[in-house]
Length: 159
Image (cartoon, rainbow, N blue to C red):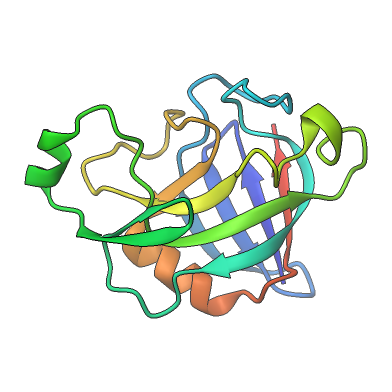
């Protein structure tokens, strides 16, 4: 299996080993556009792998901070209490760059930048950039994707 993320169309495609599309999801990449430098709040391009899968079995809308459940479950009321918070919900697919000097190592290291595919509140618009660098997905769709792909799955982020 392989995942392609298209920045221009804000779409994530899951492909089988023969390159046939199995699923397509609407996503949201970084509001700051694409880029690999640490601190840029941009979505890194290029070849990656899913280094770790975090959150298996957690209830939908579980709030995660530093890759750990906080004990909170997101609700619109909780969102209103913390309007500036970048919500990471339900599951995390933690990405690691595969291209040394481009998205791996030094100031360009996707994994050290904590770039994930993760869930987001239902009120967040998808199909247009808006994240702080990660790829946001609907929680129910992320659960589906999480269950379909193993750690080590190739992920390519394309402009």
